[in-house]
Length: 155
Image (cartoon, rainbow, N blue to C red; front, top):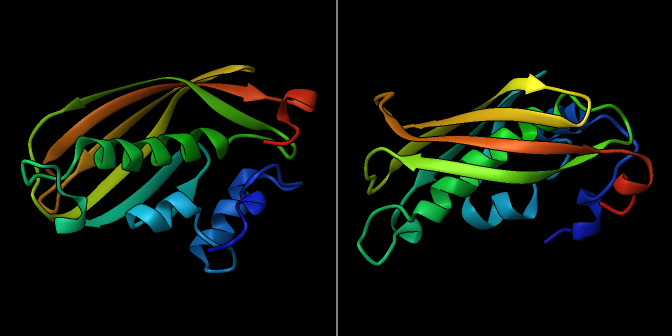
């Protein structure tokens, strides 16, 4: 596993780092490897993560655990917000809300995060998780806070 310090503050724009991940020139984050999802698309204000959900993602009831779905969409929303940040800026999530619309036992899931409002400090992002048929599995929103200067160091 790569040293987690490589995922902290980088002297490049986040979107450039994300594009390097998609191109295979940079490692996906450790949490993506742990859970099994991957960043597959990024553009300013939008990011997509994908997951092939299987038995390793099951809750005690046999469905894909809600926390796994939440991690998937949180990654998409966070990268969507971060894709708009400048070099030396980072962010933290202030609030996350998710609505689960239907159970999933296994299959290909796609999470798309889109920035709704990007202010100087606070951003609002929405996320949608769909299954192979395009049916909505979960809908989420996130409030993100951009960090700069001293607040961004070491993150």
